[in-house]
Length: 55
Image (cartoon, rainbow, N blue to C red):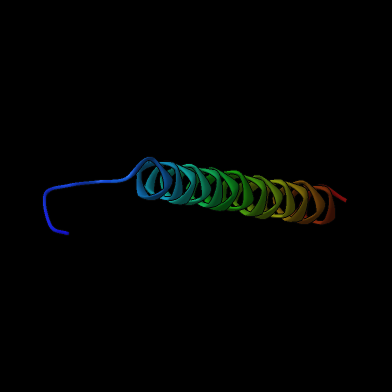
């Protein structure tokens, strides 16, 4: 019935919200890891090219 939520539907909704928040957090962490690895590889490439230029 609309407007009358049972405890089960409230629990299901809160579980769904929790799952969405967990998924969003996992995506953010994954993006940060990817960005960190990209930055690290770019820094390593710059260091390598700098050494090649100096030598």
